[in-house]
Length: 354
Length: 250
Ligand SMILES: Cc1ncc(C[n+]2csc(CCOP(=O)(O)OP(=O)(O)O)c2C)c(N)n1
Image (cartoon, rainbow over all chains, first blue to last red; front, side):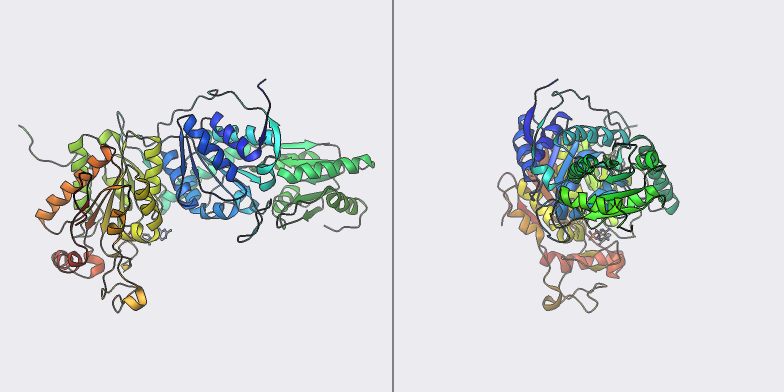
């Protein structure tokens, strides 16, 4: 057991990335994730690794493409408007099957929006985001320790599947401080990447590419990608299910899940049978958690810091077998325990139609 | 029997898809000859742009990455920063480099990235059918300046290479042309200097190569060479704008 450190979420991601063997990080300033870039500006050179502040998010993601294609563990981070700018690059990275980690500390949108926490980039993160048929593995951590653990896992899965992984945090997680424990330095062994463009010494040419002009060829490539995504969906679903025998379930991820859990405890204290489903992977979505409770669940209440995005996946998972309700706040407002509790009680008392 | 001349090792032996009279093929060959001469084929990584030369990865026999439109300098930066002892070059058209990728090229030069950029200027967007580029000359007709480029409406042609020469991080900056054998030989020499600048760790290097596009210019290959010489060179003067020894900036 290592020592516990009190750290901000943004800085914890930085240290976790270093422990995970991240060799290159490409930054561009945007609130509320600046502490991550600032932390790595100091730490990466200490470890003789690459820190570079790019001229834009567009450049940063394309630097990730180059570095990842050259075989390095690479990462970039931003917040909502910057992540929108990265989308073309992310599509290329997914298409060329390059492993990398992308952090989005989501802020309120649309447009310049606000700098306060939000979950309104769920669609963008889980449904593709850029052009074409592709998927990111998307994590929705809800504590700083989970941020650390999932950052390590993100690098591992990125390499395992040769696929970009997104950590979908929010402004609150980035700013909040909690005690965390890190894996030891040099604990990871970096995998060999015989496909990387490192110079063709002793082997034939390697090419990193996403162009397939022949329709049959691109169709085959897409079939290959889809096969990979199905394998990820079979093997990498992660979630937390609390109080499996409950009648009513709150569904929430990230910061919202913490508040939803408090609302659940309050309702339980008043004798209501309430549980919580907390997706940890937002893609692949944990349909399995719902399958476990559908036989007795009487209703679901999805809570998000958005106008209702994950709720669509909840409806798909529930597939009409129980009412699915939604409660959300936007713009940087975190739903309060009392608000969630009241929305829940309305449903339990039968006053709320799905 | 001793072989005196043959195809460069750094080029794959296959026919290109380029139009008759297009000079991309010549420029590819010159780069490959330089890679051979420097003996760096096994440690070179090239970047293919979006544009007519997108398939450069099928022609060069070195490791290659294909980059998004305009982003080749950023991709090259990513590669070079994690593999600093390799030789990294980006190949870009004028739409790619001077328009959509203007930010990436300026900042790669400004940071003094130890990469080499081969900038092929044919005054328009070749691959998409001959639209106006920042480099299109005044009065030049393209599919999106059908009556000829007018400064009041379309703006002026951009001499981006001159701009790049101002960047403190740029160590070698030259403009050359491939319209005749003498100039082809000079182009080869410039590309060699640019690669040497990179290998010596002196900073960013770029060679702008004036090039033809007979298909979209609506001229024969021969007429195109003449058009380049008579119209492009007066506006885009040839020469070394900046070199590590202090040459240039005339
Ligand atoms: C983001 C994006 N915008 C536009 C295009 C379409 N496009 C493909 S090639 C090209 C023009 C390239 O012209 P240039 O760089 O001058 O090279 P050339 O084809 O003349 O060699 C454009 C605009 C694209 N592929 N991606």
